[in-house]
Image (cartoon, rainbow, N blue to C red; front, side, top):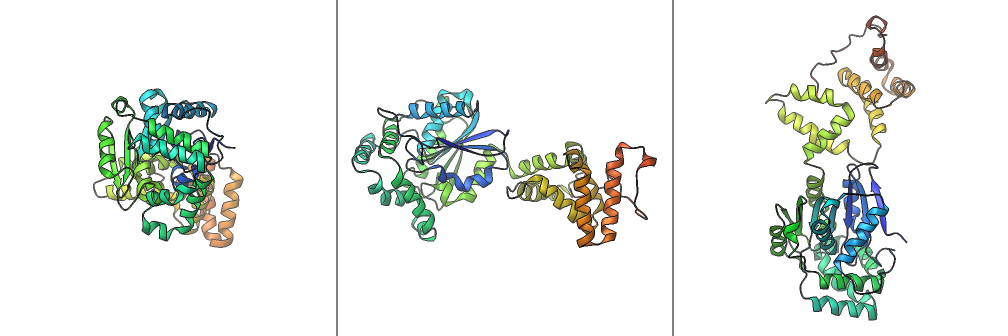
Length: 395
């Protein structure tokens, strides 16, 4: 029975993800790949949802759900975090930011508002679920969550959400439904100090765009993004646009994210030299480098960064890109790559790219490894003209 799940970068800033009524942590699957390279991710299940323990006795409230999130953060050792909430999760996120500002860094409120419609509607639904379970709600919920074209294209995914909803415990769903019924955060929203982004779906029947805009207007300084062609679960239906907005708010622009990775891989000194050489002619190229290889490819979660380093060294050696090779060997050494690992990579280069390419690469690697020696002691390969390490290069 899991109350929360943790993924992503250990030691990185934490983002806590709070889902919508009737969904589980799976509602954030499309965000995990985007967030993992940058943040530690904590997905919290609502009571009775996705294997979480049943709801406590009594009537549900947003304050009780918010305090539960704080308790789980304490259990996980998270003193302060970004908070991103979807629908019911957005209500809880706003409550946390308004009442416990010291625990919230940045805030993302998705498809949510300070007050959801008529309390009687949600109280009646809670009573019906306590009597008959969540299965009778499935068809209506799916029609609100997804547009018909998406539901037709992604039938298996929609069926998985239907299954998750049908398996939510009666008491857990009713407890959360009562929390929505009793919530009115309108008086609290102007107390929110955390930098906030409000995201909505252009075709959301639950929180239409005008209501999303009203929510943003009540939070000081909040940004607003409305994603077209999306119903209530905007992060599922339009993950690309949603993730762009989410990462931009929590981590920075694509250029800023790429520059961060570039510094981590190559070191601040090299990046500062490259930026100092930037001209009006090369500025667009530098922007491209930060966005694509560094912000996109190097940041993908499919390979560990250590593996990427060794692959880059092998490819640069095979292609004879000597300046970039020396730069990456030096960065790899600084980051803990051993002489033996370099040797093995360059031996593989000799086998598959040829002895001349490997010979030049070994000479460059020897130069970097021998930098702790006097210049006269630094080994050099036969007939190799070594490049100027500070010569202009694209990296």
